[in-house]
Length: 116
Image (spheres, helix red, strand yellow):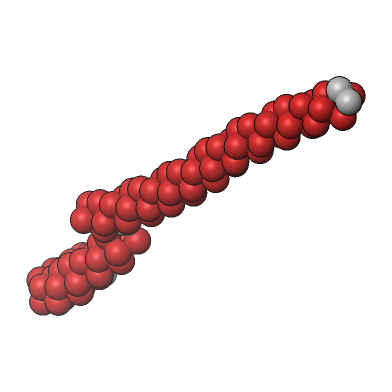
């Protein structure tokens, strides 16, 4: 009886092992394709999350242009302020000259009033 049982166990083990091997062989290709598609999808998602070199360069270029525009705008404003300051200085010098001449005229008038 023990021999029959051992023989029966061998037959079933052979059948189970053969069936599992056949299933693995049959399902290997579809599983490989499925896993490959899944891995490719995950890689695409990861790559989308990271910036490409071109996108990074474009963003850097845009930032540089914005900085250059800001510098140009500040230079124009500084130039305008310098012009105003120069005009103010020129006007101030002119006013000082007028003031000196008026003072000179007042002194001459005072001197003329005292002479009689």
